[in-house]
Length: 208
Length: 208
DNA sequence: TAGATTGTTAATCGATTAACAATC
DNA sequence: TAGATTGTTAATCGATTAACAATC
Image 1 (cartoon, rainbow over the protein chains, first blue to last red):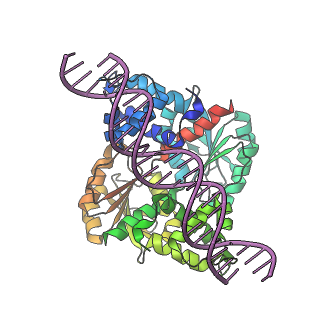
Image 2: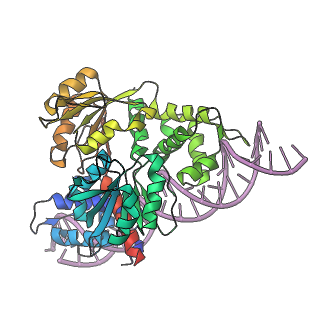
Image 3: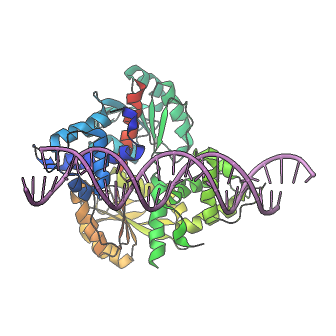
């Protein structure tokens, strides 16, 4: 039951299972590990092991009660209270994330937005008014926002990161293609959009 | 020298090294594995091993000539000719990818865009006119586009995928949070934006 | 009871790290 | 020559898969 015992890779797959469970028609049906495995394209033993790490409500022959399993995964991923997050950089990527419907199902709540562009500050995205980037520290500190998302150009990413850290943000999700420096107690998770490109191009090279 | 010998994880890290190399001031300086490791936040032995898989131009004491190393990595990642790619779904995420400057450095060339929204078709993004989604098959087939990016809502993702496959697309980069079915010779690479969420929330849970 | 599914233990596999040798 | 760095071989570590036992 220890929180830390869940392996990182399991933690990365759980959101995908949750996505699938959310997509099922509501109500109180049942799902088996194999069913989930087929839906997300993984090995079914792996799914079973992942689920065993967060739920003890699986029943032989029956599988898992959909609603119970959903709650068990959410309990591990989302915690009890919704977490506020701020987005710095309201270009297309930032706006896409702000409007992303899926986050709510993971206990994340869009709470603040920042940009330096004068024509953006004051506008509203996803029900949130965009502040000037100079206000990152003040606003995030006041609202005690624990999660920051960085979607600014790489050259200013470290500056934005510093402001978020000063504001007391504990976790930073970095979409800028640079390595960020932060104190050890602040978690930096890199999104690394380009990381997949090598896989794509290799497949094409092999086709020849 | 065999193409297939490069491990998948190495292939995922190479783009990050290339990003760093591109960020260095031009000219003919030198870089060491340790230098790259510090810049991207990895173990330096790992960087050295990754580089050894794609380049044989490292020199003791000197390190790598920046330009040569850049070329060696690019040769493995990008191939010789630029690859055309199409984006289906020109919402904020699709537009963000269309305008992403980094792809060109990986040998990828934005060549076609599709959407179903009437107010988008006919408009221009990144120098490319947006076609209606009905034209996916015709346009991609004619232009012999090998790479498709899916940034449409999950409910229509499979339909779009089918159209791309019919058009002869070999590789699909899927940003929709659903599993896609395709023939074995078509590579589906899932972007899984939500996969990181578990890591973020666990760090916060531990802070308490 | 028979069968399907979970959960666990063992075996395999691959990736990372450490130690060392080679070389400029 | 001495020192720094590459590259390789060995050791550790963790993750995935396979086989089996447990149970509804």
